[in-house]
Image 1 (cartoon, rainbow, N blue to C red):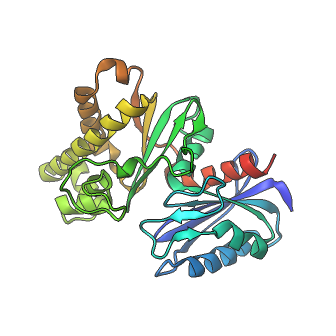
Image 2: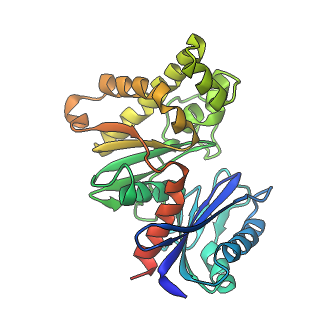
Length: 297
């Protein structure tokens, strides 16, 4: 096996996206499989092993990076908690995978993977201070400060989707109430209008005023949360990814308006708020990049 090739994995609640890359970030092979249901650690581990063997039957890649929806330990080997996956508490996934795969493994938060991927080959390239939000089943994210991934002293930072917006808001699986996730996830959008987000976007494309108003309301609330993040991190760029970002054209003006209205000029100086460039491929690319950085020398 060679450290010149690497496997990056984005583990989500409904799908697992895998790809094999070279050191330049070119995709050499890719695969997507459904996440086992329920997504308990043992079943997911076996599914990962089978998928990796299918993706790389000749064992050309010696390194594996896995992005998961939650914080890792400081050594990036234990999934501390994955709040939207059942049974994921202090799961030593790297230790489980390495002997089965005969490959080196490192773990990372999926939002961190996304921002690393965008910094490598996407919309964060060339920027030192970046906040990224993934808008989907949950609201994850990652932060770059001074060009380096910010994970805090124990590996658990940053979780921008879990900041509080409303003290008595809907309960969050994290234990918080009224978190940004409860107002910016797919479920939150469905509470505003019980229509599939793709259909709601199609309606807005066609000029439906009600659909446009719902997207504006969604963007306004998201902008309130982003304003708080801007005050904390004063980033050069805020990036929006995940499935809902496909409709960014409908809610991004409201987000920008809200941030401009709420954040003093000095704190948003030089700030741009944009969609991610890599789509759903950012997570697996970033996981691969982190594996190269941590394990590949």
